[in-house]
Every structure is written in C-alpha cells, then in structure tokens.
Image 1 (spheres, helix red, strand yellow):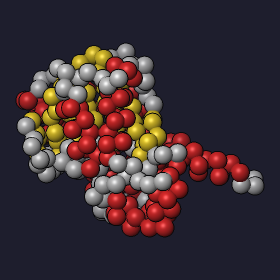
Image 2: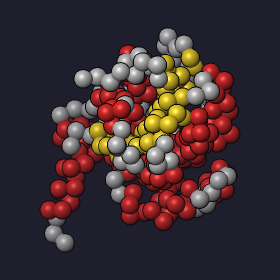
Image 3: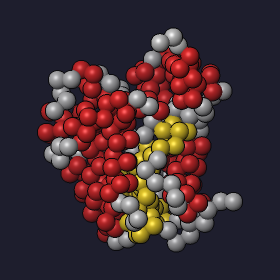
Image 4: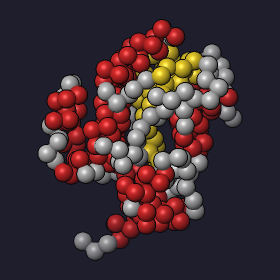
Length: 265
C-alpha cells in the first residue's frame, strides 16, 4: 500500500537529476507539494529554488527562499551531492557543510511528526571507526575552519567522498537525537546507482571495483529504487524509524561483511 502524502510539503535537494529527480517525482506522484532545490532547473518544475549548496552561506540563502514559498514544511530530503572526482573542498562543502546548514535552517519549520532523510552511501560503512575524527571536523561551525582542519590530511582529501558520507552518517544520528519526539532524521546508503554521475564513481573508486559490485548484485540500482526508500522513511509507515541508516545496495554490504568475517584473523 502506497503512502498518501496529499497535503504534505516536501523539500528535495538535487531535484534536477538522478536520485533527486526520482525522489521529487515519487513524492509528487503521491500527492505532496514538492519544492525542488538545485543549481539547475528541473524539468517541469513548479516550486523551485536555484541554489549553490556548496557553502553554508549558499544553503542559508536557499533556506530563506524555501521559507518564502512555504513557512512550514513536512519533510526534507537531502539528496544533492557531488562525487569524489570534484575538488575535495567542493565535495565536503556540498555533501556535508551545505547539507548541515540547510538542515539546521529548515528544521525549526518542519512540522511535528515530520522527517529528514539524508543521502549517505555504502562506502561509509566504516564510519564508526573514525567517529572522533568525524566529530572533530563537524565541531567547526565555520566552513573555512572546518576545511582548514583537514587540508593537510591526505586520507581525507584523497578520499573526500567517503569522508563526506561518513560525516553524513554521524550528522543523521546527532540530528535525530537532538530532535527526539518532534522530527525524525534518517539516512539511506545506496551502492552503485544508474545515474549521470556513475562514471565519476568509477573514476573515483576504480572501474573494476564498481563494475564488480554491479555484476555481483545483478545490476546497478535505478534512481527510483532509492527514491522509494526515501519516500518510505518520510511516510507515516516509518513513524518509529529514527536515527537509522537503510542500505539500498542490493545486498552488497552484507556480502562484503560476510567476506571480511570469513578471512583469517
């Protein structure tokens, strides 16, 4: 049974393409009013905010425009993101700092019982081993200070996409804890998805690794497969799901965990 989202107002970032476009379409199909946020104009957009989400200032400006369109919203889906082929500052700016700033600015206007869903990634599976480092980065409220704190760390700058999505996992739990009883915050972690930036992920993570994962699971996910889970997490059917991450990777994470556990100590 599909959820009925008629009368709900949903903000979807990255709404012009890929998973963001599929998510916006899924919410609209179920009766929600969708406010798209992107640097590019989505096809057929009605309520739309053109924004640069690579900085906290750009995200704050976007939030002001969203508030002008809808003083109260019900759900926020943070789908916008850039791959690791982009400059590392841009990756951390869009995927972490802009996401955090937009969420912080919109959370007070999300209705009680509403939700936030962040797009993480299955490359962030090892996030728990780096919690102190992730929290240290997130402890900086100023973008420049945050970026400066990791600029000499080749493990971060050379693996900026993974680090960014690990930060998203930490943020989702922290925001869920801070919003208990009012707004739910969850994340979804896809594996390879058939989007326009799939080739960027091959260049970043290695073609053999990505194509091997796709072969193992029987194909790359469609954007709609991920969007369906985002919609579920926003719906009343997930009303007791909070602070959780849902893998949408066709079992890839389970395979890797099992393979690692089978290796000799």
